[in-house]
Image 1 (tube, each protein chain N blue to C red):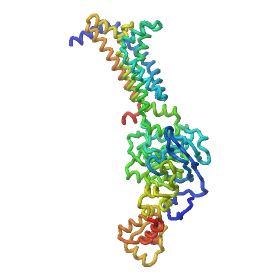
Image 2: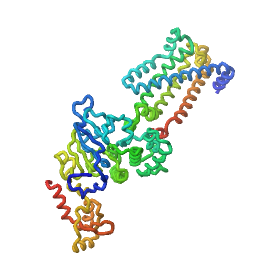
Image 3: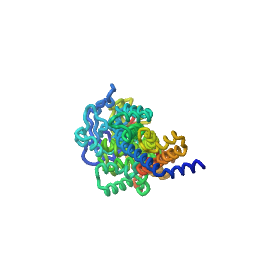
Image 4: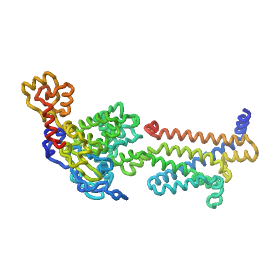
Length: 346
Length: 219
């Protein structure tokens, strides 16, 4: 699915949908100038999002990322250019009808405080006039998917939930009618870092199952690198760079992207690189070293984990396992070479 | 204790007259409340939708509210179609109810959290669905505060309508003053207060029934 740059080592590769390349969302020279402002909020932005991918819009506040997101479901009408979903120009569809087909999650969550969690999650199915028993079944199913206990939580009101639980309910509500597309505006921005990390992991796991096409807005580059199959970097309404996290890290377009990513590009890369991609065949000597310190990591874990294990065991080599079987080793020298190769200019 | 005894014996002695006054008082209040709710809640909702009129409508309500009630009653009597009695009294009281009702409906609808509306819109709710499923239910507590204020206020103000020919509890107070009969004044005042408290209590029960527990607890 994703072209350019050798991608065998990317942790994210596993998330890609197999099969033909399918452009789910396409923006063509999209432009937005708000009334009474001189500077466009979004300036001739074009990109495509493939089906089943998470595309992250990242940039500083006021860069136009949220405006782009809100144009995709027509909460904001573009002043120029066009947006296509599945080949259909969204301006040909009624706004309310369009939005019922697109999941929407915002940072403030916006659960209706006067409705129970059950009613909140069932909101869009009710708008679409599903029969009541189908709604109930779906709500229960969704609560289990996002990790809310239906027995415990269904009848509660939003104020009775923790921040993390509310966010889960928000995601469940957006998933209610199984929309192929989800728009998420800093969905994990309002919870503390520990819960955020957990929600991110859970969400990625959920995405493996549901395979939605997702537009995800964040100002946090680390979240973008973690969540994104594809990243669109924006600044002052203009598209600065688009590409995979690997491409961003190994080949930032300019100083703005470099600054955004930070000086630890090489180390961040290690988080996206699977241990198996740098794997060396075991020799009798290395096998012995590894056995002595008994440090192993799983083949699918990122190289960063290898570093962690090495430091913990004061070793410069780890064994790589797939299941119970040792399939090779990874040494400090190879990691160093890998970083130098990809971000040689640092 | 003697005062209480005197007031009670006064009420018992004038039982039928007081019952008539109370009935009149009550029916005036209910009529006014009925029309006020229909009229002013509609106006309140309209100005929350057409925001540019909100300032002038609420301004008008405030101006009406500060007119001394006795003068407004008097003014309406001079209009031939209204004349003495129920019509003038009801119209004046409906106008006084405008301020608490229109203002609270508007304030209630406007106080709905923007992020909730944004989420509602983002999920494809139409303008009408937003109004009836989000804005109105969330505005209930504030709207009801306005309704309760209006009810208590109308009950009290209705006493003044005795001067334009309403035979209600105001007459008891009025005659008490002119005759220097304190038992009469106290009887009138106490019964008016009881009606006020009763209405307020009934409305508070209605409010409880119509307000989502999700709002009551968090608010």
